[in-house]
Image (tube, rainbow, N blue to C red; front, side, top):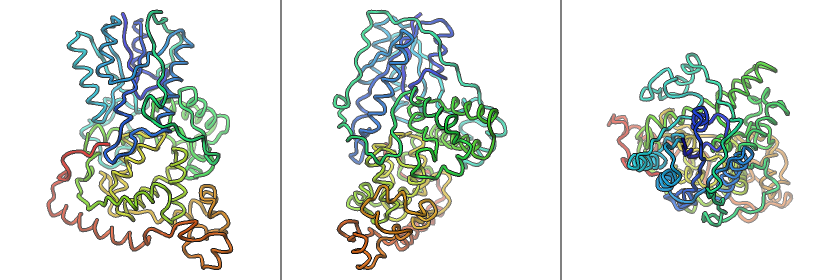
Length: 503
C-alpha cells in the first residue's frame, strides 16, 4: 500500500509520526514537499512574507531532507504550488491509498488542510493527520485545550507536575525505494520563488545558520555535548554576542528540522550523564513557553492576529511610517535598539533579549501598530514561528492573555545590564566604537567637543534620538490606561476587531 507523506514544518526523519506510522505498517511512503507561493507574497503592510534569510534556510532544509532520504535510497518529491491541489493530484496519479501529514494551528495552514481533506474525500483517498510540534499531545495535557490557563505559570506548573514527555520516535533505518518512474522535481531557486537573494553573509554575524536536520543535530551536539554549554545556559542565555551564550536551536525547531521531544530527550540524557541544575531545567522551561504559545493558538484561533489581541483591548495604534523606517533600519538614536535591528537586518537573527527590547520600544515608546512589528519579524526572522511570534507581540503590546499593565523595557537599564561594556553595540554600530565605556549607550549626552574627540557627529554619522524615552513612555501609558478604563467599563472581553489582521 502506498502512502503519500506530505512534509510541512516537519523537515526531519527523526520523531516523525506520519513517516514512522507508514513504515511501521510496512506501507510504501512517498515523501513530498510543496513550495506554496502564497507564502512568498506580501504581508498586509507590504513586507515580503518570507524574506531572503528565511527563504534560504527553508530551501536548505528541504534539500537537506532530500539528501537524507536519498541516503536511504528514497527521495523527496518537490513541487511548486498550492498543496491542497497538488497533493491530492499526486496521490491519485501515484495510486496512493492515503495521505499522512502533521497538523498545523493557525488559519492559513488550517484552511489548506481543510481544502486538502475535502478533495481527498471526493477522490476516495484516506487521510490521517498527526500532532508533532510540541512536547505533548493534546490528550496528554492535564486539561482540555479549551481550559488551557491564560497564565503561563499556571500552565507550566500543572504540566510539569502531571505529565511526562514521551520518548521521541526513532529515525527510520530503511525505506522502500521509490519507483524509478517518479519525477521528483527540482528544488526551486529563490528567484523562482520571487525572493531576492540575501547579500553575502555579514562577517559580524555571531553564527551562520544553515538549514536542515543534519545541521540542527550538529548544533545540538556541539552546544550540549562538545562545548558543554548547557550547564551554564541560565546564566548566559541573555548574552547577545557570543554564539554559545544561548542554544540558538530556534531556527531548526521552527521548521521542524529538530523536534522538541528530541531536544528534551537530549537534555534528560545530559542530566543523567553530566549534571542536572537550573540551566538544564531552564532550557526545558523555554520549550514549554514555545509549546504554550502554540496551545494558545489552538485555543483562541485567529484572536492572536486581532489588533485588539487576546484581551480585546482597543488601543490608538499609529501607522507612522517615517518612525517605523527608523526603527526597522536601526536609526532610532538608541544604540541597543539600533544594534539589534542592524543585526536582524543583515543576518536574519536577533537574541531574545534584543527582541524584547526592540518590540517594547516600537509599541511602548513609538506607539506604532504592533502588527507592523510582528509582520517585519515574520519577514526577516530566520526562526519565525507563527504562534511564538504573534504570541510574544501580543504580550509586548499589552493586549495578550497574560498582559500585566503597561510594562515597558527601560532601554538604558537594559543596555547597562546586558551590554555593560558596550561590546555588542560596538560590534554592530562601528560608528560609535570610539565612545568609551557606558557612554556609548547615551551618545546624545556627548558635548560637541566629545563628539569631535570620538569622531561622532550626532544627526550626521549617528542619528539623534527619535523620541524622549521617558516622555514617550508616559504619553503611551496614559493612552493605555484610558483604553483599559474603557475596556473595564464595557467588561466585554474580545470586543475588539472582529476580523483578524492576518499575518
